[in-house]
Image (cartoon, rainbow, N blue to C red; front, side, top):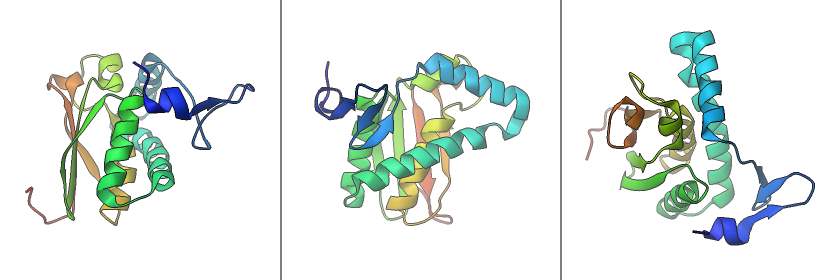
Length: 167
C-alpha cells in the first residue's frame, strides 16, 4: 500500500539521493542495522545502547523540528511518518504535559535483532527522546519498558517528568 510519503512526498533527485520535505533520507535493511548494533554491543557491552539512541535522538529531533506544530499534532504526525517509512505501527498511548507513552508493533529493530534478554529498539527510543524533548519541553529520558525482542507483544516507550506518577 502506497502512503502519502511514498506516493507524494519522497523525492529521488536522480543523483542517488532521496529527500522528504527537503531532508535527506535513505532506505536501509533492518538486518544491516541489527548487525551494526551487535557489533557496537560487542565493542561497548552495556554502554552500547546510548550511542545508538543518540543517533535516533538527532534524527528524531531534526524530523520533529522540521514538522513543527502544536504538541499533539506534532506527535501524531511523527508517529504516522514512522509507520509510513517502515519503522513499525506506532500508537500514541498517552500524551500530557508531563508524559509521553508510545507503543510500536512490528518494530523492524526487534524483528531483525531476534531474541534478546532486554530492549533492543535503541534507535526508536532515541527518536522518541528527540520528540519528547520538544513536546515535554526539556531533556527527559525515554525508557523502553517492553520490547518484542524480549518476548513482549509490542515495544513500549515512556517519557515522564521526574517525580510525576503515571496517569
